[in-house]
Image 1 (cartoon, rainbow, N blue to C red):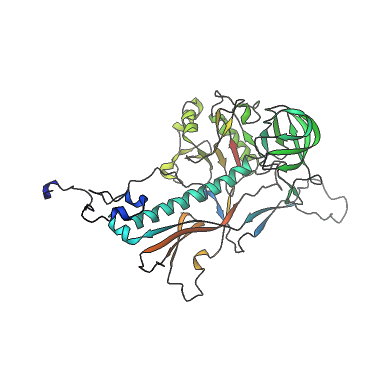
Image 2: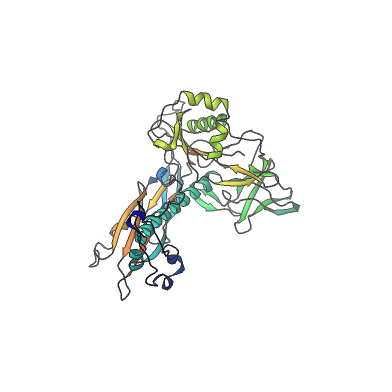
Length: 436
């Protein structure tokens, strides 16, 4: 090959002269072709890591597996009547508690630095980048699932019909597992039942089997598939019509409208939920966005939008009291009477809807030892207050070639219920919307 025929971009070399390739692991062989190799790896398709960014940080220190309890106080009841005597009666305010559990998450990879050098495109750098992406995706979904388990819970439907008994199998038991007793989340039991309605008829839940999605009822009944099961303290949610109780009732014609989002904003304002810089935030996926652009009310409101500096390119704009943000990581559920309707679930939220509780001092674990300079420990994103430890351990093999790099995060995400204010519904700082 002459110099004139060499590639103008990247770098290359030929491994055919020495049979190194056949001695390497199969996963490495594929990036060490006999021939030309460009000094670059093509990028995978990446989502945005948005959910950790909305969490308000509450750093804490505890042992792995320990549960921490945070307490939020309510308000005193307003008085509008004059005192009957000379001495007012003592009053008290209510409290609520929510818990987080100190768990550890992480992934590790080994990189052979000799192989990394031979592959031209640095496998060390690529492994480090893939670990960073893994950390972002993992924490994004941990935060997302915590938020949605709370705000989409307490509302489900019967999946299996049957004769009269005290058991009912439902699509999900999220939101039915605990009741607040003196402000503390307490497992549902016969002594602490949860009031529910099933197909509009009052009942109670006295036990929950999360493994089989079965609720034990206080009153026997004959179950019919599709009947709505709604907890008395279920979070407020919005669907295209008030006649649609759950995702089971949603059909393909029940698409997203601007009216649904206005209802969510009205709910948050009525509950006195604080905004973020004067606006609430809506996360919507591509299907929701497409349907909204078919809605005349949405397009009219969009024409007079105020650009949002909050999310820059991710934001559609600011209007209707909302920062509109594209998020491709929103979860969906299988709804419809046949279970074949993909139900999308955008969310509108205000300040402090989600709290992060990372371990305080994760980057200083070796500060008091003699080996603090041996491994490299760096604290990196993906969001303010939710930082991940990126750890590079020096080689432990005799040839000093194989090093390990790892990401680790210790902590949890919490969702306050705000049960001490407003109406009887739990989790008042966000609203989940459902549509086909």
